[in-house]
Structures are given as C-alpha cells and as structure tokens.
Image 1 (spheres, rainbow, N blue to C red):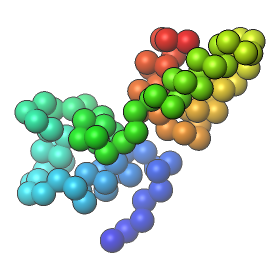
Image 2 (image 1 turned 180 degrees about the vertical axis):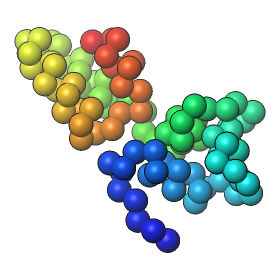
Image 3 (image 1 turned 120 degrees about the vertical axis):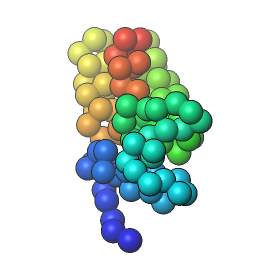
Image 4 (image 1 turned 90 degrees about the horizontal axis):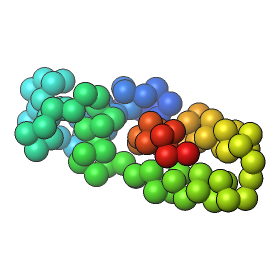
Length: 96
C-alpha cells in the first residue's frame, strides 16, 4: 500500500476511503455515504466519522478571542489552516 501524506489533500482522503469503503466501483461511489453524494472525498470521510470535528479548533479560537487581540486571532486562524487541516474551515471563519 502506498503512503500519502495528509498535506496532499484530496488524494489522502481518497486513499483513506479506499481502505474503508468496500465494493466501490467508481470514484463517484466513494463519495456517496448513506444516499448522499458529497462534493469532496474529505467531506465524505467526515460523514463517515473518520475525521475529527472542529471542536478542538473552535475551543482554541474561542479562547484566543477572550485573551488576545485581533491580529493574534488572525495568526492562530492561519496556523490552524496551514498545519491542522480543520474539517470545515469556513465555519471557523464565519464564527470568529
């Protein structure tokens, strides 16, 4: 089996789905989870519960809002995007 690093993005999630979903005959079928077709392999992995949710990053951003200034909040958000790969970065952006 080939190694795919998390930073590769969709290929990482595709490989993850290929090891979990049995009997898929196309890339499109890999994205269908419980009769719902998801737009990306990452979202499909999230629907299967294979990924952590944004709770940890939400807590981090919330604490930063209380204790730090706007510039620090922006820096924390960028760090989370670059190195932590949150499941739904749009939700964090809209919330904070």
